[in-house]
Image (cartoon, rainbow, N blue to C red; front, side, top):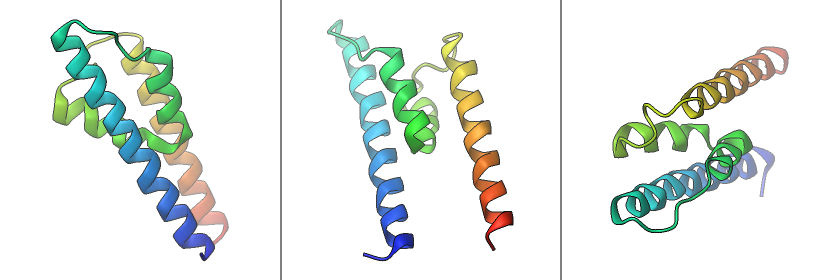
Length: 92
């Protein structure tokens, strides 16, 4: 598999897994079951799943008011978006 396809496959996989983790945690919150630790959700976002995390927050209306979770997630998103932009500018 070529490097761009490998990166795209990784991005798709990590974002789908992150969204699924948000979905499972939302269902657990509703039914009073065991919850996914916030650290796990943030780790998935930091591993590149921040788009899936943002989608999970907005689509599922989950963890939208929880602090400091929200601030940490936005910090991860800003850092990774800036790093991606920098990488694109340097290596175009």
